[in-house]
Length: 377
Image 1 (tube, helix red, strand yellow):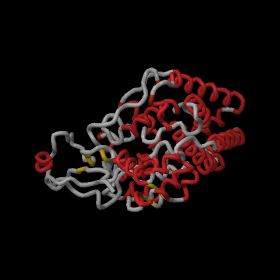
Image 2 (cartoon, helix red, strand yellow):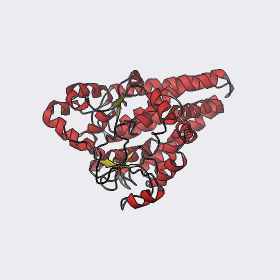
Image 3 (cartoon, rainbow, N blue to C red):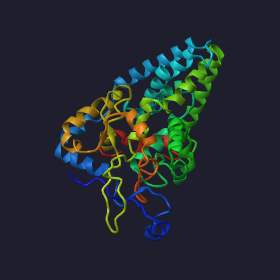
Image 4 (cartoon, helix red, strand yellow):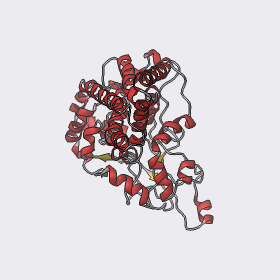
């Protein structure tokens, strides 16, 4: 099985040693810097060579649209039922956390699936359905999420392209128990605002449609159900990306927790560090199997229902990879373990490319058509 990454970390016993040892690319951060391409393309090719039948798993999953319809209906029902409840009441907050946050996290990940063209065959149908799935979230984001997320796949760990990476500023100021607790509590805001700080997307037609549709929906909801109904949806979205069990996937996917990986730099020694981690627990049932994250990055064209089959077929490639057993424990360890934090991400200076551009909404580029081609994304 090929090596999946080669990285280094820098640690020093004194400030002088630190300054003397830092490589030419080092800007004072402590990220795990990699000097090879991202690991998933290599492993995908190896899996296809060893198990060519996995390519038959690619393609849209018809069940996705029905689950989205059910969750959208659930959230609208809850919003209407709570329209007369106080926002600070126990029933309002408990419903928003237990039902609303779980439902909206489910919709976040439905949009993630749809962004890979895995709900319908036609790209336009996927773009429009993502806007529909966005409605109970309360804030337009599905159109912008897609190019940022596909760039994350094409440019995993690439500094300045992969907006899933924390910035050096975030890692420096939040490098404490309090800072990490703050990050976990408000991480939905970091994921919403950080991409715009890294690079901005052009205002495409689908992005504009997403904004208009969401504002129109919000206005209608307030008009006929009242402002508290909309407040329920917004609170659900915030809690979905806060201290919620399902929100553990944000941290579990790419932060390095493995003690063997977090070792100091030895002069001239390059240390292999995994940069994607799977989770094989029960919360996958609520989150479109996003926990099978190595499997997803290896084959983004395989939908959520077939990722377990991929894992079983290629078990010889996945059995020895480090993985998580609990998203709740991931959050707890991230906050309290002094050796884990926002610095614990693999970064690389080169490779990858942006996905999306001025003409993305015309649906004519390979970026849009390639989502169901094995190995393209």
